[in-house]
Length: 144
Image (cartoon, rainbow, N blue to C red; front, side):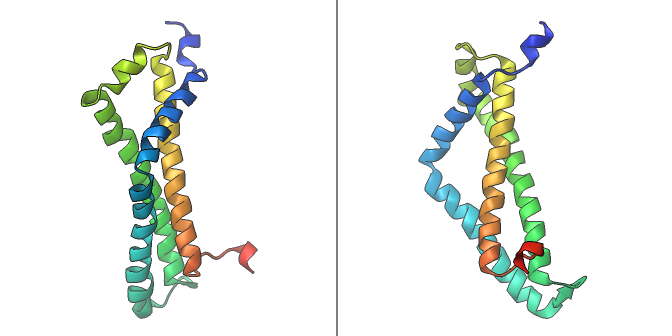
């Protein structure tokens, strides 16, 4: 195996496109979870517990907790996609065996899976940031 075989080619985008097509079928329940979970967390912890806590290091508790929810959700989403979902595609569904029967290489599949996990983490982060902005939990220099 040469070093050129380790560099992914545009076939990685085909893996991302395949994963997106499968995910699109479950778009509504997936997005409901992406928006519903932070809504419940920010209501319960941000407003409920935040009422008793007040401020953390000069910032409202809901802002403090929102940043942690974004970080933990991105980590959990990308880890789940990279571990459990990839294991299911390998073991139960035999998706990777089917992909290897095409011109895709292992490096393409790996790069596509890593890119897809990052995209899923980004989707999760954007959903949480949207929900947190409705609660006024997003603060920064651009918000005055």
